[in-house]
Image (cartoon, rainbow, N blue to C red; front, side, top):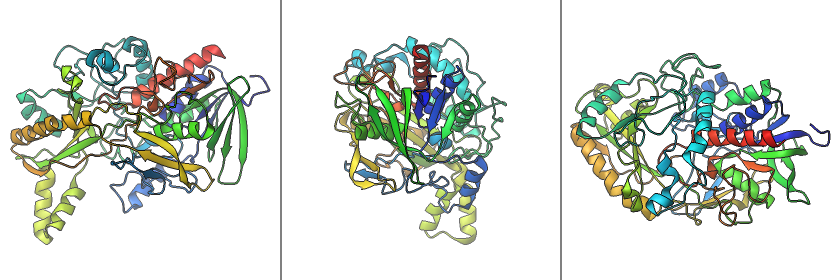
Length: 529
Protein backbone atom coordinates (compact mmCIF):
# COMPACT_ATOMS: atom_id res chain seq x y z
CA UNK A 1 0.00 0.00 0.00
CA UNK A 2 1.24 3.46 -0.89
CA UNK A 3 1.80 5.72 2.11
CA UNK A 4 -0.41 8.35 0.51
CA UNK A 5 -3.46 6.22 1.41
CA UNK A 6 -4.78 5.15 4.80
CA UNK A 7 -5.83 1.80 3.29
CA UNK A 8 -6.19 0.00 0.00
CA UNK A 9 -9.92 -0.37 0.65
CA UNK A 10 -12.31 1.19 3.14
CA UNK A 11 -15.52 -0.74 3.84
CA UNK A 12 -18.37 1.25 5.36
CA UNK A 13 -20.52 -1.14 7.39
CA UNK A 14 -19.64 -4.38 9.19
CA UNK A 15 -22.77 -6.42 8.48
CA UNK A 16 -22.70 -9.74 6.64
CA UNK A 17 -22.14 -8.12 3.24
CA UNK A 18 -19.46 -5.63 4.26
CA UNK A 19 -17.63 -8.11 6.49
CA UNK A 20 -17.51 -10.78 3.79
CA UNK A 21 -16.13 -8.24 1.33
CA UNK A 22 -13.55 -7.06 3.89
CA UNK A 23 -12.50 -10.62 4.71
CA UNK A 24 -12.15 -11.50 1.02
CA UNK A 25 -9.77 -8.57 0.51
CA UNK A 26 -7.86 -8.92 3.79
CA UNK A 27 -7.07 -12.60 3.26
CA UNK A 28 -5.60 -11.66 -0.13
CA UNK A 29 -3.20 -9.31 1.60
CA UNK A 30 -4.93 -6.00 0.98
CA UNK A 31 -5.00 -3.37 3.71
CA UNK A 32 -8.60 -2.84 4.79
CA UNK A 33 -10.35 -0.48 7.19
CA UNK A 34 -13.93 -1.27 8.29
CA UNK A 35 -16.04 1.57 9.64
CA UNK A 36 -19.00 0.70 11.88
CA UNK A 37 -21.43 3.26 13.32
CA UNK A 38 -22.23 1.01 16.30
CA UNK A 39 -20.17 -0.91 18.81
CA UNK A 40 -18.75 -4.40 19.12
CA UNK A 41 -20.88 -6.31 21.62
CA UNK A 42 -20.39 -9.90 22.84
CA UNK A 43 -23.16 -12.43 22.31
CA UNK A 44 -23.61 -13.08 26.03
CA UNK A 45 -24.52 -9.44 26.57
CA UNK A 46 -27.20 -9.49 23.88
CA UNK A 47 -28.63 -12.69 25.37
CA UNK A 48 -28.76 -11.08 28.81
CA UNK A 49 -30.42 -8.00 27.34
CA UNK A 50 -33.08 -10.23 25.81
CA UNK A 51 -33.67 -12.07 29.06
CA UNK A 52 -34.12 -8.79 30.89
CA UNK A 53 -36.25 -7.10 28.24
CA UNK A 54 -39.97 -6.62 28.80
CA UNK A 55 -40.43 -6.41 25.01
CA UNK A 56 -39.84 -10.02 24.03
CA UNK A 57 -41.55 -9.66 20.63
CA UNK A 58 -39.52 -6.57 19.69
CA UNK A 59 -36.50 -8.11 17.98
CA UNK A 60 -34.54 -4.84 18.14
CA UNK A 61 -35.03 -4.49 21.89
CA UNK A 62 -31.89 -6.38 23.06
CA UNK A 63 -29.67 -4.28 20.80
CA UNK A 64 -28.24 -0.78 21.24
CA UNK A 65 -30.29 2.23 20.20
CA UNK A 66 -27.91 5.12 20.62
CA UNK A 67 -28.61 8.77 19.76
CA UNK A 68 -25.79 8.50 17.19
CA UNK A 69 -26.60 4.95 16.02
CA UNK A 70 -30.34 4.36 16.02
CA UNK A 71 -31.98 1.06 15.28
CA UNK A 72 -34.96 1.17 12.95
CA UNK A 73 -37.75 0.65 15.51
CA UNK A 74 -36.95 4.06 16.98
CA UNK A 75 -39.93 6.18 15.88
CA UNK A 76 -37.66 9.20 15.37
CA UNK A 77 -35.30 7.40 13.04
CA UNK A 78 -37.59 6.76 10.05
CA UNK A 79 -40.19 9.30 8.94
CA UNK A 80 -42.77 7.58 6.74
CA UNK A 81 -44.73 9.65 4.21
CA UNK A 82 -46.37 6.92 2.12
CA UNK A 83 -49.45 4.82 2.70
CA UNK A 84 -47.38 1.98 4.23
CA UNK A 85 -45.32 2.25 7.42
CA UNK A 86 -42.02 0.77 6.28
CA UNK A 87 -40.01 -0.04 9.39
CA UNK A 88 -37.56 -2.89 8.75
CA UNK A 89 -35.66 -4.39 11.66
CA UNK A 90 -32.27 -2.73 11.05
CA UNK A 91 -29.48 -2.79 13.65
CA UNK A 92 -26.26 -0.81 14.05
CA UNK A 93 -23.48 -2.82 15.68
CA UNK A 94 -20.60 -5.00 14.52
CA UNK A 95 -22.24 -7.80 12.55
CA UNK A 96 -25.28 -5.76 11.54
CA UNK A 97 -28.84 -6.93 11.13
CA UNK A 98 -27.98 -10.62 10.64
CA UNK A 99 -27.75 -10.83 14.42
CA UNK A 100 -31.53 -11.33 14.33
CA UNK A 101 -32.42 -12.68 10.91
CA UNK A 102 -33.86 -16.20 10.53
CA UNK A 103 -30.83 -17.20 8.36
CA UNK A 104 -32.78 -17.97 5.16
CA UNK A 105 -30.13 -18.43 2.43
CA UNK A 106 -31.97 -18.78 -0.87
CA UNK A 107 -30.64 -18.39 -4.39
CA UNK A 108 -32.61 -16.61 -7.07
CA UNK A 109 -33.61 -18.86 -9.96
CA UNK A 110 -32.73 -17.89 -13.56
CA UNK A 111 -36.29 -16.74 -14.33
CA UNK A 112 -36.20 -14.31 -11.39
CA UNK A 113 -33.32 -12.54 -13.11
CA UNK A 114 -35.14 -12.13 -16.46
CA UNK A 115 -38.49 -10.80 -15.27
CA UNK A 116 -38.85 -8.15 -18.02
CA UNK A 117 -37.76 -10.48 -20.83
CA UNK A 118 -39.97 -13.39 -19.79
CA UNK A 119 -43.02 -11.68 -18.30
CA UNK A 120 -42.92 -8.08 -19.55
CA UNK A 121 -42.86 -6.43 -16.10
CA UNK A 122 -40.22 -4.93 -13.84
CA UNK A 123 -36.55 -5.16 -14.73
CA UNK A 124 -34.03 -7.75 -15.82
CA UNK A 125 -30.76 -8.24 -14.03
CA UNK A 126 -27.79 -7.10 -16.17
CA UNK A 127 -26.19 -10.53 -15.70
CA UNK A 128 -27.04 -14.20 -16.09
CA UNK A 129 -27.57 -16.66 -13.25
CA UNK A 130 -24.53 -18.57 -14.50
CA UNK A 131 -22.31 -15.54 -13.81
CA UNK A 132 -23.42 -15.36 -10.19
CA UNK A 133 -23.57 -19.10 -9.49
CA UNK A 134 -19.88 -19.58 -8.49
CA UNK A 135 -20.24 -16.73 -6.02
CA UNK A 136 -23.42 -18.21 -4.58
CA UNK A 137 -21.33 -21.27 -3.77
CA UNK A 138 -18.61 -19.14 -2.13
CA UNK A 139 -21.26 -17.32 -0.09
CA UNK A 140 -22.79 -20.61 1.03
CA UNK A 141 -19.37 -21.85 2.13
CA UNK A 142 -18.66 -18.65 4.07
CA UNK A 143 -22.05 -18.61 5.77
CA UNK A 144 -22.14 -22.36 6.40
CA UNK A 145 -25.46 -23.05 4.70
CA UNK A 146 -27.32 -26.31 5.22
CA UNK A 147 -29.69 -27.32 2.46
CA UNK A 148 -31.19 -29.94 0.17
CA UNK A 149 -29.51 -30.52 -3.19
CA UNK A 150 -32.43 -32.53 -4.58
CA UNK A 151 -35.42 -30.15 -4.54
CA UNK A 152 -36.87 -27.96 -7.27
CA UNK A 153 -36.70 -24.61 -5.51
CA UNK A 154 -38.85 -23.04 -8.22
CA UNK A 155 -41.72 -24.87 -6.50
CA UNK A 156 -42.93 -26.51 -9.69
CA UNK A 157 -42.24 -30.10 -8.63
CA UNK A 158 -39.48 -30.82 -11.16
CA UNK A 159 -35.87 -31.90 -10.88
CA UNK A 160 -33.33 -30.16 -8.64
CA UNK A 161 -33.24 -26.45 -9.50
CA UNK A 162 -31.54 -24.01 -9.84
CA UNK A 163 -28.27 -25.41 -11.26
CA UNK A 164 -25.42 -25.82 -8.76
CA UNK A 165 -21.68 -26.33 -9.24
CA UNK A 166 -21.27 -27.88 -5.80
CA UNK A 167 -23.15 -29.24 -2.83
CA UNK A 168 -24.33 -27.29 0.18
CA UNK A 169 -21.66 -27.20 2.89
CA UNK A 170 -23.94 -29.02 5.32
CA UNK A 171 -26.82 -31.43 5.15
CA UNK A 172 -30.30 -30.07 6.02
CA UNK A 173 -31.61 -30.31 9.55
CA UNK A 174 -34.31 -32.86 10.28
CA UNK A 175 -37.89 -31.81 9.58
CA UNK A 176 -39.76 -30.48 12.59
CA UNK A 177 -42.97 -32.23 13.62
CA UNK A 178 -44.91 -29.11 12.57
CA UNK A 179 -43.38 -29.18 9.10
CA UNK A 180 -44.02 -32.91 8.76
CA UNK A 181 -47.70 -32.62 9.66
CA UNK A 182 -48.40 -29.64 7.38
CA UNK A 183 -46.42 -31.21 4.56
CA UNK A 184 -48.35 -34.46 4.94
CA UNK A 185 -51.83 -32.95 5.04
CA UNK A 186 -51.51 -29.78 2.94
CA UNK A 187 -48.91 -31.23 0.58
CA UNK A 188 -51.26 -34.07 -0.31
CA UNK A 189 -53.48 -31.49 -2.02
CA UNK A 190 -50.72 -30.45 -4.44
CA UNK A 191 -48.95 -27.75 -2.45
CA UNK A 192 -45.17 -28.11 -2.92
CA UNK A 193 -43.25 -27.80 0.38
CA UNK A 194 -39.60 -26.83 -0.10
CA UNK A 195 -36.89 -27.02 2.54
CA UNK A 196 -35.35 -23.64 3.28
CA UNK A 197 -31.57 -23.52 2.86
CA UNK A 198 -30.31 -21.66 5.91
CA UNK A 199 -27.10 -20.42 7.47
CA UNK A 200 -27.51 -22.54 10.57
CA UNK A 201 -24.94 -25.18 11.50
CA UNK A 202 -26.18 -28.76 11.58
CA UNK A 203 -22.71 -29.78 12.77
CA UNK A 204 -19.76 -27.84 14.11
CA UNK A 205 -18.72 -25.44 11.34
CA UNK A 206 -16.10 -22.70 11.24
CA UNK A 207 -16.32 -21.12 14.72
CA UNK A 208 -19.91 -22.19 15.31
CA UNK A 209 -21.48 -25.10 17.21
CA UNK A 210 -24.31 -27.22 15.84
CA UNK A 211 -27.83 -25.88 16.34
CA UNK A 212 -29.41 -27.23 19.52
CA UNK A 213 -32.95 -26.04 18.75
CA UNK A 214 -33.21 -23.12 21.17
CA UNK A 215 -35.87 -21.56 18.90
CA UNK A 216 -34.50 -18.11 19.67
CA UNK A 217 -32.98 -17.32 16.25
CA UNK A 218 -34.82 -14.03 16.49
CA UNK A 219 -33.82 -11.93 18.29
CA UNK A 220 -30.51 -13.73 19.01
CA UNK A 221 -29.11 -17.23 18.69
CA UNK A 222 -27.80 -17.83 22.23
CA UNK A 223 -24.98 -20.15 21.15
CA UNK A 224 -23.97 -18.73 17.76
CA UNK A 225 -25.01 -21.73 15.66
CA UNK A 226 -26.84 -19.34 13.35
CA UNK A 227 -24.54 -17.24 11.19
CA UNK A 228 -24.29 -13.53 11.86
CA UNK A 229 -22.04 -10.94 10.24
CA UNK A 230 -19.80 -10.56 13.27
CA UNK A 231 -18.25 -13.93 12.31
CA UNK A 232 -16.62 -12.46 9.21
CA UNK A 233 -15.97 -9.11 10.87
CA UNK A 234 -13.76 -11.08 13.27
CA UNK A 235 -12.28 -13.16 10.43
CA UNK A 236 -11.40 -9.93 8.62
CA UNK A 237 -9.71 -8.57 11.74
CA UNK A 238 -7.81 -11.83 12.14
CA UNK A 239 -6.53 -11.37 8.57
CA UNK A 240 -5.28 -7.88 9.38
CA UNK A 241 -8.26 -5.61 8.68
CA UNK A 242 -8.67 -2.64 11.03
CA UNK A 243 -12.14 -2.28 12.54
CA UNK A 244 -13.13 1.18 13.77
CA UNK A 245 -16.36 1.32 15.79
CA UNK A 246 -18.44 4.35 16.78
CA UNK A 247 -17.59 5.73 13.34
CA UNK A 248 -20.57 7.05 11.39
CA UNK A 249 -19.68 7.92 7.80
CA UNK A 250 -21.33 11.13 6.68
CA UNK A 251 -19.46 12.17 3.53
CA UNK A 252 -17.81 10.53 0.54
CA UNK A 253 -15.41 13.04 -0.96
CA UNK A 254 -14.96 13.32 -4.73
CA UNK A 255 -11.62 14.07 -6.35
CA UNK A 256 -10.89 16.08 -9.45
CA UNK A 257 -11.03 13.03 -11.73
CA UNK A 258 -14.38 11.83 -10.40
CA UNK A 259 -12.95 9.12 -8.16
CA UNK A 260 -13.85 8.97 -4.48
CA UNK A 261 -10.76 10.04 -2.57
CA UNK A 262 -11.86 9.99 1.06
CA UNK A 263 -14.58 9.19 3.55
CA UNK A 264 -15.36 11.41 6.53
CA UNK A 265 -16.78 9.98 9.75
CA UNK A 266 -17.85 11.27 13.15
CA UNK A 267 -17.89 9.60 16.54
CA UNK A 268 -19.94 10.13 19.69
CA UNK A 269 -16.75 11.37 21.36
CA UNK A 270 -16.48 14.37 19.04
CA UNK A 271 -13.99 12.96 16.54
CA UNK A 272 -14.27 14.11 12.92
CA UNK A 273 -11.92 12.04 10.79
CA UNK A 274 -10.98 11.92 7.11
CA UNK A 275 -9.63 8.63 5.71
CA UNK A 276 -8.28 7.97 2.22
CA UNK A 277 -8.17 4.78 0.17
CA UNK A 278 -7.79 3.48 -3.35
CA UNK A 279 -11.23 1.88 -3.33
CA UNK A 280 -14.37 2.28 -1.24
CA UNK A 281 -17.19 -0.16 -0.53
CA UNK A 282 -20.41 1.15 1.00
CA UNK A 283 -22.14 -1.69 2.84
CA UNK A 284 -24.45 0.30 5.08
CA UNK A 285 -27.84 -1.42 4.57
CA UNK A 286 -30.50 -0.82 1.92
CA UNK A 287 -31.66 2.41 3.57
CA UNK A 288 -28.44 3.91 4.93
CA UNK A 289 -26.37 3.24 1.79
CA UNK A 290 -28.47 5.49 -0.48
CA UNK A 291 -28.72 8.09 2.28
CA UNK A 292 -24.93 8.35 2.46
CA UNK A 293 -24.70 8.74 -1.32
CA UNK A 294 -27.39 11.41 -1.31
CA UNK A 295 -25.91 13.54 1.47
CA UNK A 296 -22.50 13.19 -0.20
CA UNK A 297 -23.91 14.12 -3.62
CA UNK A 298 -22.23 11.18 -5.34
CA UNK A 299 -23.20 8.32 -7.70
CA UNK A 300 -26.52 9.90 -8.63
CA UNK A 301 -26.23 11.16 -12.20
CA UNK A 302 -29.17 8.85 -13.01
CA UNK A 303 -31.34 10.31 -10.22
CA UNK A 304 -32.03 6.72 -9.12
CA UNK A 305 -30.26 6.73 -5.75
CA UNK A 306 -32.86 6.01 -3.09
CA UNK A 307 -35.58 5.21 -5.62
CA UNK A 308 -37.12 1.83 -6.61
CA UNK A 309 -37.43 0.70 -2.99
CA UNK A 310 -38.81 -2.83 -2.73
CA UNK A 311 -39.69 -4.98 0.25
CA UNK A 312 -41.37 -8.37 0.16
CA UNK A 313 -44.47 -6.75 1.62
CA UNK A 314 -46.54 -9.55 3.11
CA UNK A 315 -49.56 -10.75 5.02
CA UNK A 316 -50.16 -13.53 7.51
CA UNK A 317 -52.50 -16.36 8.49
CA UNK A 318 -53.03 -17.76 11.99
CA UNK A 319 -55.31 -20.68 12.78
CA UNK A 320 -55.82 -23.55 15.19
CA UNK A 321 -55.39 -26.99 13.60
CA UNK A 322 -57.55 -29.94 14.55
CA UNK A 323 -54.50 -31.79 15.87
CA UNK A 324 -51.42 -31.02 17.93
CA UNK A 325 -48.60 -29.73 15.69
CA UNK A 326 -46.34 -28.10 18.31
CA UNK A 327 -44.88 -24.92 16.92
CA UNK A 328 -41.67 -23.83 18.59
CA UNK A 329 -39.45 -26.87 18.25
CA UNK A 330 -36.18 -26.26 16.40
CA UNK A 331 -35.38 -23.27 14.19
CA UNK A 332 -37.93 -20.47 13.84
CA UNK A 333 -38.56 -21.31 10.19
CA UNK A 334 -37.76 -24.29 7.99
CA UNK A 335 -39.34 -23.77 4.61
CA UNK A 336 -42.61 -23.22 2.90
CA UNK A 337 -44.94 -23.55 -0.05
CA UNK A 338 -43.55 -22.42 -3.39
CA UNK A 339 -46.18 -23.26 -6.02
CA UNK A 340 -46.60 -19.57 -6.84
CA UNK A 341 -42.88 -18.72 -7.04
CA UNK A 342 -42.74 -18.82 -10.83
CA UNK A 343 -45.03 -19.05 -13.84
CA UNK A 344 -46.60 -17.09 -16.66
CA UNK A 345 -49.00 -15.52 -14.13
CA UNK A 346 -46.16 -13.14 -13.26
CA UNK A 347 -47.21 -11.09 -16.27
CA UNK A 348 -50.33 -10.12 -14.33
CA UNK A 349 -49.67 -10.43 -10.63
CA UNK A 350 -46.91 -10.97 -8.11
CA UNK A 351 -45.26 -14.24 -7.22
CA UNK A 352 -46.14 -15.51 -3.75
CA UNK A 353 -44.29 -17.56 -1.13
CA UNK A 354 -45.94 -19.02 1.96
CA UNK A 355 -43.43 -19.64 4.76
CA UNK A 356 -44.21 -21.86 7.74
CA UNK A 357 -43.41 -19.94 10.93
CA UNK A 358 -42.13 -21.94 13.87
CA UNK A 359 -41.71 -19.62 16.82
CA UNK A 360 -43.02 -20.51 20.27
CA UNK A 361 -46.60 -19.10 20.22
CA UNK A 362 -47.30 -19.02 23.98
CA UNK A 363 -47.22 -15.24 24.41
CA UNK A 364 -49.57 -14.66 21.48
CA UNK A 365 -51.93 -17.38 22.66
CA UNK A 366 -51.95 -16.06 26.23
CA UNK A 367 -52.55 -12.46 25.13
CA UNK A 368 -55.51 -13.53 22.98
CA UNK A 369 -57.08 -15.56 25.78
CA UNK A 370 -56.57 -12.88 28.42
CA UNK A 371 -58.15 -10.31 26.08
CA UNK A 372 -61.15 -12.65 25.95
CA UNK A 373 -61.37 -12.63 29.75
CA UNK A 374 -59.93 -16.11 30.28
CA UNK A 375 -58.02 -16.45 33.57
CA UNK A 376 -56.93 -18.95 36.22
CA UNK A 377 -57.20 -22.69 35.67
CA UNK A 378 -59.15 -22.22 32.46
CA UNK A 379 -56.36 -20.02 31.07
CA UNK A 380 -53.80 -22.68 31.90
CA UNK A 381 -55.82 -25.43 30.24
CA UNK A 382 -56.64 -23.46 27.12
CA UNK A 383 -53.10 -22.14 26.79
CA UNK A 384 -51.74 -25.68 26.81
CA UNK A 385 -54.32 -26.78 24.25
CA UNK A 386 -54.19 -23.86 21.83
CA UNK A 387 -50.41 -23.47 21.88
CA UNK A 388 -50.13 -27.09 20.76
CA UNK A 389 -52.45 -26.50 17.78
CA UNK A 390 -51.37 -22.99 16.80
CA UNK A 391 -50.24 -22.51 13.16
CA UNK A 392 -48.81 -19.37 11.56
CA UNK A 393 -48.13 -18.82 7.87
CA UNK A 394 -46.02 -15.82 6.85
CA UNK A 395 -46.63 -14.87 3.23
CA UNK A 396 -44.52 -12.61 1.02
CA UNK A 397 -45.23 -11.00 -2.35
CA UNK A 398 -42.95 -10.05 -5.21
CA UNK A 399 -42.67 -6.26 -5.50
CA UNK A 400 -41.77 -4.30 -8.63
CA UNK A 401 -39.41 -1.29 -8.64
CA UNK A 402 -41.14 2.10 -8.74
CA UNK A 403 -39.29 5.40 -8.68
CA UNK A 404 -41.88 6.88 -6.31
CA UNK A 405 -41.02 4.31 -3.61
CA UNK A 406 -37.92 5.84 -2.15
CA UNK A 407 -35.67 6.65 0.77
CA UNK A 408 -34.23 10.13 1.27
CA UNK A 409 -32.23 12.03 3.85
CA UNK A 410 -34.57 13.72 6.28
CA UNK A 411 -34.70 17.51 6.04
CA UNK A 412 -36.17 17.90 9.53
CA UNK A 413 -34.48 15.27 11.71
CA UNK A 414 -30.83 14.69 12.58
CA UNK A 415 -29.11 12.31 14.96
CA UNK A 416 -26.84 13.31 17.84
CA UNK A 417 -23.95 13.80 15.40
CA UNK A 418 -25.93 16.23 13.27
CA UNK A 419 -26.31 13.70 10.43
CA UNK A 420 -29.73 13.51 8.72
CA UNK A 421 -31.96 10.58 9.60
CA UNK A 422 -34.27 8.82 7.14
CA UNK A 423 -37.43 9.71 5.24
CA UNK A 424 -39.23 6.88 3.43
CA UNK A 425 -42.13 6.90 1.00
CA UNK A 426 -43.58 3.46 0.27
CA UNK A 427 -46.84 2.34 -1.31
CA UNK A 428 -47.90 -1.24 -2.05
CA UNK A 429 -48.41 -1.51 -5.81
CA UNK A 430 -51.26 -2.97 -7.88
CA UNK A 431 -49.05 -5.90 -8.93
CA UNK A 432 -48.98 -7.08 -5.31
CA UNK A 433 -52.63 -6.25 -4.70
CA UNK A 434 -53.63 -8.35 -7.72
CA UNK A 435 -51.98 -11.39 -6.11
CA UNK A 436 -53.74 -11.04 -2.78
CA UNK A 437 -56.90 -12.97 -3.78
CA UNK A 438 -54.76 -15.95 -4.76
CA UNK A 439 -52.91 -15.88 -1.45
CA UNK A 440 -56.23 -15.58 0.40
CA UNK A 441 -57.60 -18.56 -1.50
CA UNK A 442 -54.55 -20.54 -0.45
CA UNK A 443 -55.17 -19.50 3.15
CA UNK A 444 -58.70 -20.81 3.04
CA UNK A 445 -57.50 -24.09 1.58
CA UNK A 446 -54.78 -24.51 4.23
CA UNK A 447 -57.34 -24.03 6.99
CA UNK A 448 -59.73 -26.49 5.35
CA UNK A 449 -57.05 -29.16 4.90
CA UNK A 450 -55.97 -28.85 8.54
CA UNK A 451 -59.52 -28.82 9.91
CA UNK A 452 -58.65 -25.42 11.26
CA UNK A 453 -60.32 -22.57 13.10
CA UNK A 454 -59.23 -19.16 11.82
CA UNK A 455 -57.67 -16.75 14.30
CA UNK A 456 -56.57 -14.14 11.71
CA UNK A 457 -56.56 -14.43 7.93
CA UNK A 458 -56.23 -10.81 6.84
CA UNK A 459 -53.49 -9.02 8.75
CA UNK A 460 -53.17 -6.18 6.25
CA UNK A 461 -49.80 -5.48 4.64
CA UNK A 462 -46.79 -6.27 6.80
CA UNK A 463 -43.06 -5.46 6.79
CA UNK A 464 -40.75 -8.27 5.73
CA UNK A 465 -37.38 -6.49 6.12
CA UNK A 466 -36.03 -7.50 2.68
CA UNK A 467 -34.92 -4.19 1.20
CA UNK A 468 -33.92 -4.00 -2.46
CA UNK A 469 -33.71 -1.56 -5.37
CA UNK A 470 -32.53 1.60 -3.61
CA UNK A 471 -29.20 1.68 -5.49
CA UNK A 472 -30.48 -0.37 -8.37
CA UNK A 473 -28.31 -2.42 -10.72
CA UNK A 474 -28.63 -2.14 -14.49
CA UNK A 475 -26.89 -2.04 -17.85
CA UNK A 476 -27.72 1.62 -18.60
CA UNK A 477 -26.09 4.41 -16.56
CA UNK A 478 -29.08 6.67 -17.19
CA UNK A 479 -31.51 4.50 -15.21
CA UNK A 480 -29.36 2.62 -12.68
CA UNK A 481 -26.79 3.34 -9.98
CA UNK A 482 -24.38 0.41 -10.37
CA UNK A 483 -23.41 -2.00 -13.13
CA UNK A 484 -23.30 -5.79 -12.93
CA UNK A 485 -20.08 -5.59 -10.86
CA UNK A 486 -21.80 -3.44 -8.19
CA UNK A 487 -19.49 -0.63 -9.29
CA UNK A 488 -21.11 2.79 -9.41
CA UNK A 489 -21.38 4.20 -12.91
CA UNK A 490 -20.16 7.61 -11.75
CA UNK A 491 -17.07 6.58 -9.76
CA UNK A 492 -14.95 3.66 -10.89
CA UNK A 493 -13.48 3.09 -7.42
CA UNK A 494 -16.79 3.10 -5.51
CA UNK A 495 -18.65 -0.20 -5.06
CA UNK A 496 -21.89 -0.88 -3.19
CA UNK A 497 -22.31 -4.04 -1.10
CA UNK A 498 -25.99 -4.05 -0.29
CA UNK A 499 -29.16 -5.88 -1.25
CA UNK A 500 -30.20 -2.43 -2.48
CA UNK A 501 -28.53 -3.22 -5.81
CA UNK A 502 -31.02 -6.04 -6.56
CA UNK A 503 -33.28 -4.98 -9.47
CA UNK A 504 -35.95 -7.71 -9.29
CA UNK A 505 -37.18 -8.89 -5.92
CA UNK A 506 -38.68 -12.33 -6.57
CA UNK A 507 -39.98 -13.82 -3.32
CA UNK A 508 -36.85 -15.13 -1.63
CA UNK A 509 -34.81 -13.56 1.14
CA UNK A 510 -32.02 -11.57 -0.56
CA UNK A 511 -29.17 -11.86 1.97
CA UNK A 512 -27.27 -14.74 0.35
CA UNK A 513 -27.44 -12.95 -2.99
CA UNK A 514 -26.09 -9.81 -1.38
CA UNK A 515 -23.17 -11.72 0.14
CA UNK A 516 -22.43 -13.42 -3.20
CA UNK A 517 -22.38 -10.06 -5.00
CA UNK A 518 -20.18 -8.58 -2.27
CA UNK A 519 -17.60 -11.35 -2.53
CA UNK A 520 -17.61 -10.91 -6.31
CA UNK A 521 -17.09 -7.15 -6.00
CA UNK A 522 -14.22 -7.68 -3.55
CA UNK A 523 -12.51 -10.07 -5.95
CA UNK A 524 -12.84 -7.53 -8.76
CA UNK A 525 -11.26 -4.86 -6.55
CA UNK A 526 -8.46 -7.27 -5.59
CA UNK A 527 -7.58 -7.82 -9.24
CA UNK A 528 -7.50 -4.09 -9.94
CA UNK A 529 -5.40 -2.89 -7.01
